[in-house]
Length: 136
Length: 91
Image (cartoon, rainbow over all chains, first blue to last red; front, side):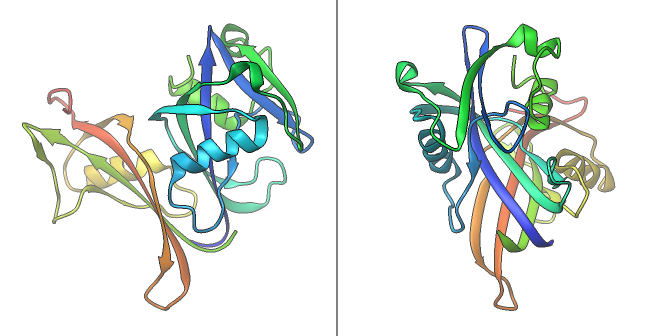
């Protein structure tokens, strides 16, 4: 494939039946922390740890990989491109210290039962991981 | 980022401490535009007469380098632990 592409890596953090999500000024839905890896990055787990630190000042321990997904268009702009989403189940090591680091505007712990009942608008990838049983 | 990206999806099938290879490779294929990563390795397995069930995703891998034409290229390997349908638990 040739053209624009993004490879993103991020964690799924669940504690006491709640899912950690964040929001920025680009999308109107909650999404999993994490983001685009830099060109040349080969260690996706390290990229995942770095992204969480950058976005929410979080420190994590990676447990295992979850289902990856390829999107063939940007869900926000509808631009044709390949977006490869990689995620890991992870444990947050510094819960009291997390905070939104701009451009992240908000951090929230969403009740998984409420997410299941569509009470919150979450990213398509979050919905995919719920369907796959990775978020439960 | 802009450039060339090649993504491969493979099934890792283990039985009695042996790994199933087809023609020296894991059962899988390169993903083409519009395709789903899980469907690609399931379809490849079907093509060679194997019906598989994907059990769980394994660690993905990314490599950056040059292709045969000297152009920058990124290669991503996605793999899944899988089992042959009607077989044991895939471990």
